[in-house]
Image (cartoon, rainbow, N blue to C red; front, side, top):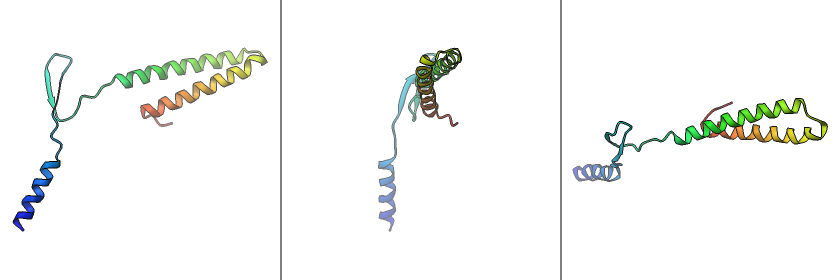
Length: 97
């Protein structure tokens, strides 16, 4: 019985995540952690793209109000594409409608 408890504890220790991550912070200090550094770069890029798509949607809606019948279908397709892009970016950023 005693041996099986020791063996079980040994197995648990073998599977433990003992990774150590190191990186330099903004102040130039060395940081040691058991978790990797998270990057906000992707979040910033997606947020900027979302803002750009929202602006483009507003401009397309404004253009639709003053468009000719020939341009109307093209602008409606453009509006739909911008809305799809906004929905995709919101999902990637974790926003729920």
